[in-house]
Each structure stands twice: as structure tokens, then as C-alpha cells.
Amino acid sequence: MTLAFSPAPAARTLAICRAAARFCARRGWAPVTEMPLPNGRRADILALLPDGGFVVVEVKSCARDFLSDGKWPEYRDFCDRLYFAVDLDFPRALIPEEVGLMVADGPDAELVRDAPDHRLAGARRKALLHRYAMTAAGRLAAMQDPAGFSELRAALRVE
Image (cartoon, rainbow, N blue to C red; front, side, top):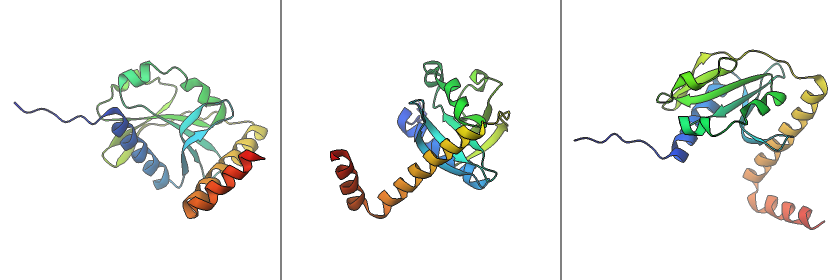
């Protein structure tokens, strides 16, 4: 008897997220993972498009993950298009028709259904772009000088 290997949910989520980020990068989108949004939610991926638009990609590793998480409609207020990213084993019939769908297969993902466009208002786009830039630049600075960035963050908390 041979048992099929199924990765743990956290490893599965990470693999899907990486494949979705590669999907974004191949299209010239600039993905930022675990992006905090103004409503207190955190997008799995917020990608800046070449035209200045934004895409949110919500990663789901299994049916239980999807069914227990009803917050995904709240991401719509912070993107021009909303996608789900799942893997080959995910029951795709669960994903609502009003969002885009990409499916991860190993290190890459393919588009199954494009997301409808619902353009952000100009003021919200500007505020989101500022948040995106500050988050991305902060993460880059932390990678380049982890000790210095930690010291700066600690000093800012004291003030």
C-alpha cells in the first residue's frame, strides 16, 4: 500500500503563494506578500500593475481554509481586480464566479479565469500606492541592513 504525500497546510499555502507571486512577476506586476490594508486586513499578495492598478491575490490551500474565511469580499475595496490562487487539488467549484482564479502547479501558476475590473477611486489609489511603497521600501531596507532597521524601529517605538 502506497500513501500519497500531502504537504502540511502551511507548506501548501507557502507553495501556492510563491507560485502566485511568480505568476505576477511574469506579467510585469510587482507583488508584495502579507500586505497590511487600511481596513486592518492583510492581503496575501498585493501587486502593483504597470498601469498603476492593483490586484489582490487571496491564497487558499484547501476547502476548509476557504469555507472558514468569509473576509475575502473586504479586499475588493483595495484593488482593481481580485483573484484567488489555489493548487491543483483545490475544489475549484467553491470559488465564486465574480473573482479571478489562478491555479498553482508546482513552482508556477496559470490563469484559469480573469478577474473583472472594478476601478479604485483616485484618492484611495493614491493612499494605497503610498502604503504599498512604504511597506515595500521598509522591507527592502530591512533586508539590506537588518540590525540597523531593527534599531530604527525600536527607537521609533520609544518616541
